[in-house]
Length: 198
Image (cartoon, rainbow, N blue to C red):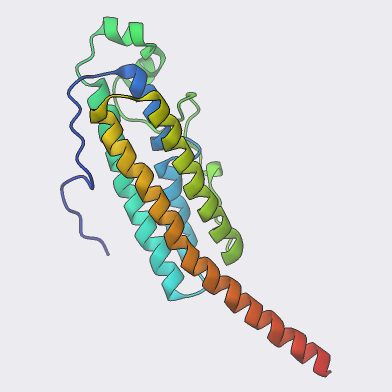
């Protein structure tokens, strides 16, 4: 189903570690509006999509979110590699370090671990697509918040790329939403007409 290219979707080349920034960015790995939840949401919802076009969009966006997960993990890794115990302590990274050393683990910036309860797959196409549109906007907002806090261009450039992709994903979900609404409206009119004929 997939071809994996052994390169990131957008290059990440951070030379200066900074655990404080890593603690913020980790939220887009496993936080409530992060890439892990997005990929699982879309790849789960695709099975009850109302048509193959909607299924294709959910698959495309869901797999791209996996690529974003890889980028965020790379950013966090590059921000935390080669830290000394003193730097870990000074940056406030010690609680994370105690549990995970500098391994990548899905959690929010607050420290709350990732949970599948952070996303929904209802089987109702309209409900799921509305959630998908909202999820992309929430992820964009999180990236906006990160960019307000992060000034280092080595970190901010890939974050800007990820933010831009959230906007594209929001736009991509627009067509399936319109098609689903139109399809449901057609069905509703048909059913109303049939009922009034009785």
